[in-house]
View 1 (cartoon, rainbow, N blue to C red):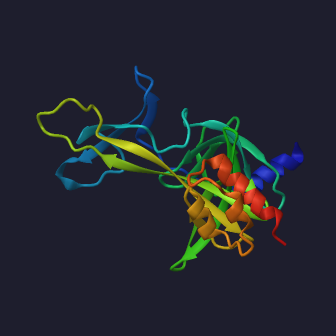
View 2 (view 1 turned 180 degrees about the vertical axis):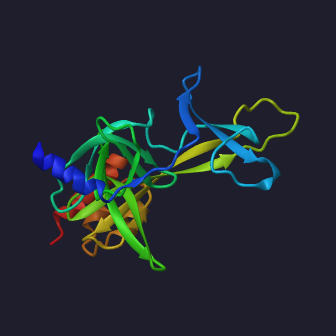
View 3 (view 1 turned 90 degrees about the vertical axis):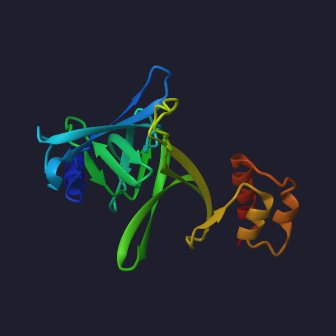
Length: 239
């Protein structure tokens, strides 16, 4: 227990407090996940740090959410530092902003974290750090297969605004959060290469001078299971 407390204290030193959100994620009567946001518009064009009576309220409703899971907060663990000892907490993973937040037991405060790896709702993620223009960023990928070659999946999300006519009331939503999945193959910790679920794409990504993988893959279109099996087979004859 003492070791866990010291580890947690060290980990908290790298956290930053997450900002207050005015959006909530719920389910409607039809069991659809919806996001409701309230914006406070200051009158006279002055920015205010908090809502008050001088501000008007605008409410918008979106279909879906920018989070990986519903409910947003799910049991999980964080891994960071040299010890790699999992730290349990509730995790919310925003796949639109690539931000991981956590809430520790006995603490209702939300913390924004940058773990080396984490697991949420039974799904494991690793991080990849990149530097561009002097700025460091961290992206998270679900591990589908980890051998000499890795198969990774990235979840992303973007908001598609609804095109509403003034006289149309058919669509109650102001937009839709569209979730997307992209698959990657990584060989020997080299640069990630995007791959489609097709025979042609896999052969373009993986160098196969012996043509063994070419002979192994007989179908033009693949599912995720077949993609993982193909990479595992490829690993089997690599030095």
